[in-house]
Image (cartoon, rainbow, N blue to C red; front, side):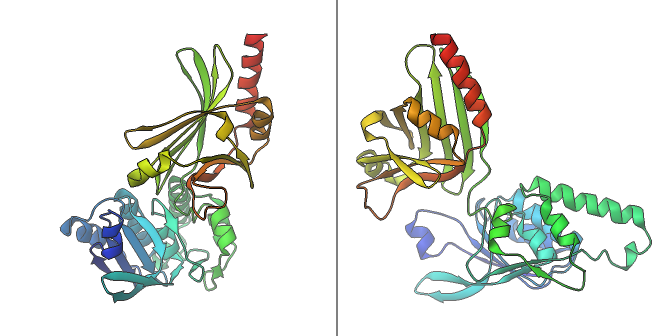
Length: 331
């Protein structure tokens, strides 16, 4: 496999970023991981840079090692190959990640795929050295499963690959890639927890994304009504965000207006903090939700918004328990 490291282009500079683009092309060999690490170190490439993989596959062990290097350097992975350089902008084209390359792709902290790129999987061929050595084959299979789990991907991917003969290939539909967590579109998993501060209990959902940390909190104070507290990174748009007029709560595919319930909206060192009163109707709708989120816009028909949507809500029982404690406490 050949690696080509490209410094930040004009678009990256205009966005205020420093990420490089690394183009990984060709068959994966056993030493691909160590060569990528050497290239990253020599060019002092920053964390959060982007690797574009276009490969027919190759060494399984090499793919595992390559994926671990990608994760150790917090790279974001894309399926694709180097495209044209025009007027200072480095473009990329669609590509393919097959077999061991699909394993390497999982190393990306955030993983993206365009509409026409493909990921292909099959049962891994363990090579002549493993013929008849059942124990070693089982150990390698366990290593692959552990690796997939450690990358935040469902092990159903391994089961799916195991059903496809080694001399065949399954092109995985994009919907399946997203369902299994192979492609996460820049969003990490949401962690829901019940925590406490002086005078209050709260339910907190947190996820890391390519746009920064996002938090969704429902707070139950010892005195007073429950309230919603939203936190997300504002970046260079903080001043513009603070004057936006339309506040809305995203519950599944619906948007609920919050402007009349707003308590405060502040900038805390680049993090937008927004607080709103909650009524029983909204609490009930959140409890039944599959996803939640929050948007801010200049107007209801504005083309863009800030905030976040589709944060998975699988904390129904936690919220139900907090509601029970809260209402017993005030009765």
